[in-house]
Figure 1 (tube, rainbow, N blue to C red):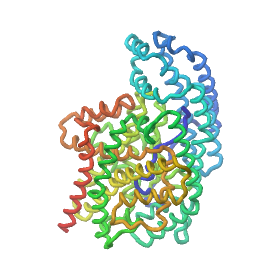
Figure 2: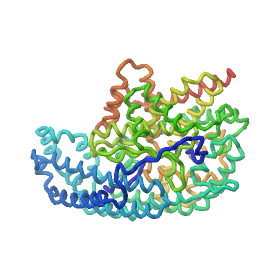
Figure 3: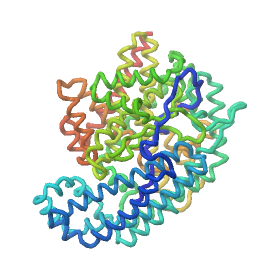
Figure 4: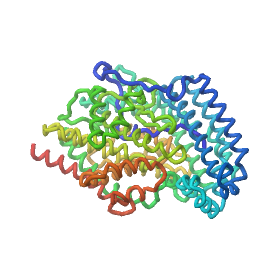
Length: 618
């Protein structure tokens, strides 16, 4: 497959931070990409790019058409050797792709960065075309021959999880030349429209008063204590989205049609089945999750927003008040070093090993924290490759939510470090489980801060913010999922207008937010900035999956005797080698159990109960 750089970003989980006085935040770190390569024109980078091309040709010449024989052979001509060579190629190609991607996302408005990223992607796509035969041909080898080979050869048995996982793709695999065409055309298809979306979003400016702000700064104002400023920011966002809506409509229509063509050729029945397959999760499990969350809307978001409207002195909140701070919320900015200490102390109280791994991100320049023009919005943790280390991108501006984002992305980073021992082919965790460590890290940090808070007003503000974050992570993401389902279903009947997409967006927003939120004019275009819809269709349910899973997991932790931490680390170290059922079994959890999701959602409901009790007591 092409080595497209598509980081998992948390932009839509909650509005991200944007511009704050540098002096109040302290020294914010910049990542050091020379850990990957000295520069774009360095001898070592150019040599690796050339070596990747040469090695892929050699690999193809050595193994193409010979995998059936290799599967029945041990030693240098055996399949285990081929897989070790493929592992090495994956690491090399991944390092090159990561460097190009991280360079690009450091400043997406820099034309030189864009050219470098595009040129590298094109070269990696060409290189990948010579490796495409390997999974396709291996899936045509009789399973019995491969299974017998794994029984005889321990070196081949090491790759059993990857081989078994690969077989799940077999029913949707096309003839080799068609697969190659899909691969090579991706550069001028989906990848090109992904880049158009990213560069468009990075270049937009939003006029708030006399200021011309990038997206992050405008979104940040939705968390301001001044309702007039929130309204100005919301109207500026709506206006700029509206002014540029033709581009976003074109991108959405094109990518939805591109996906429909691919799904039809491959034989996927449901519009989200390809995502479920990639996540190694059953459609029934996701359907049960979505159903449980939708049924919980009145008990969660509807109930909470009605309470918040009353706290803000409103009968009904405007859409731009959804993430407004409560009067009890402290308005000071949190310096970077305080955020660092908060997260590391929370991690350390759970397990010193976890804090030690997270500490390396600070000590060894694996984090890029400042918000700046041209930089990718939101936040992500990119694993790069096992021979290197992950990197974290933030847009840190000192809000309490930014501290939670730091905890979230470091959770990803710790997970990626631990899973790296599985090697390039088996370290990648399905998205549903990839959110486990990140959400768990957030929960540890929140609980640490809450335990330190004795003041009832501050406790109320903290609980409210956590409830809002959980609603953003569960309710909002399932609403996003339902929106995507409506868009991709409607697109099968023809191109969608901006009005139609806006209508679908408002329908799911009204349902999920409830009657306490007034949907303001202009909000019909706010679907346009969500990157998950573009980069990873149907990704969003992974957030809800992860949050509900972690709620259940944290309940087990609270009641566990010794040994929970060890089992938790084993879950993270597994990477992509085990199904979610195997990973959750040691904790007594089962995602296929209809009551599983209810348990996770009940924790959110319990926090709302606590807020209501605090409100009555005050």
